[in-house]
Amino acid sequence: MSSYSQPLAIIGISCRVPGANGPAEYWDLIRSARDATGELPEEIIDRELYFHPEKGVLGKIYSYVGGLVDRLPFDNSKCRLPENSLDDYDPAHLTTCEVASDALRDAGLDPFNLPTKNVGVYIGHTGGTNKAGDIVFSIYIEQ
Image (tube, one colour):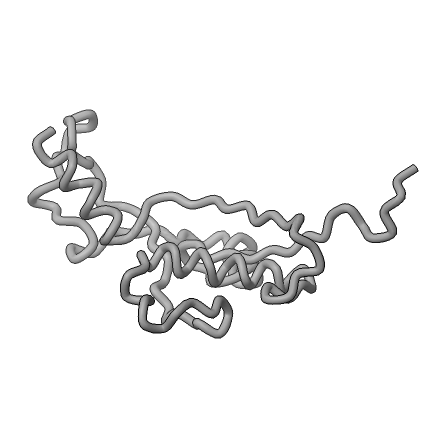
């Protein structure tokens, strides 16, 4: 028998995925069977540089279809990052901070006053933003 007086796990959830900004919107997306993917706008991907219609061409994509997460204004009250350094952060990292903060609040926890240091936030992330993408693509451009 455990000597813990508190539950071993408190679970909270939050998300920001293509077509949904939070668990309620995500559930609506699933229930309505909507497709949140579509043709990527030209300002997201330089088609002349990265597109080739044949699958498997090194360094090229063969589809314009993708899903984009809404770029919402960053709410620093959720994370308390230094205002003078916000422009230095990748927008994906700022979004991650906000979503993690929302998940803690969903679990009934205050992110600024956690009752224990034994807290984990598990993140599924793919892709990136222009800052990360520019760095990655510039490294492999010759390939």
